[in-house]
Image (cartoon, rainbow, N blue to C red; front, top):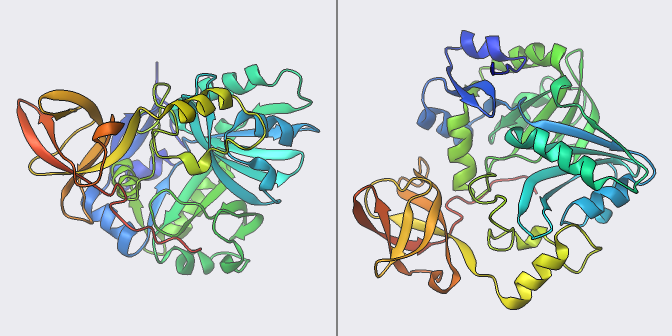
Length: 362
């Protein structure tokens, strides 16, 4: 099957991006280097093409009721133009996907889902829509998304838009922003641990907005640094920290799961899991030597007690660290464990999984 291109593919080639296959798209893993791009976002500003992400519109009389039933967080508390992070669960409590829920109006919601899960998620949503007076539309192929991230993101973007960006609070959006002569939806959520904005435009306008930002000396950032940045801030990635085999409670996402809320798909299973005791726990590890990659076994007294979900030498912290899902009884802070790194067992210590303190504008 041929790989898809975002509307910005030619810009990535022109900028000498190293193109890889990601979720069925040809996308840049890096341009000048993952560490340099990572540091640009931490210390200045960087621009990501995230047009591969999926977008689904939910409209109709029962839109609020449907989305509330679909996800684990409390959608009812949202006001117009507010955004919510949440998860969709299967009946057994494991995760279909994590997503952002944008409330535009009481009868109009906008769901942003992960690229690798777009088709699966949309089929799941359609399957849960019976009995609700709504329309569902997968508009992913019509929408381009750019993410401008870093401590200088607001200053850079402010010079190009017709609104005061301070008016867009954290986890809020404005659907009427003009960037030059392009109308955009601009939100402030982020996936890097830094302040920043997501810019949603039509495919036809993506290159124009990209070039406006690149002309401000903003560095383009690839998928490699996107992963190291989110990892340092302990932001989950589907297929790693959450999946159809991992529930949100063991992944440390309890604050996004409202078990005292209205019924939602998977609630009964999650209530039972909480009452009987969560079996596994996501922890941070500092690795004594080498890099612990996804899937490596975590051991205690030669007994396998879990596995690595993500591991890197952190560009910001300067140490080899990892996230791991381990048996809860071994999950206390400071616990000494071992990680099977290729043919050797390497010492590892449980530390805070928030390797980097987030710098969001609250």
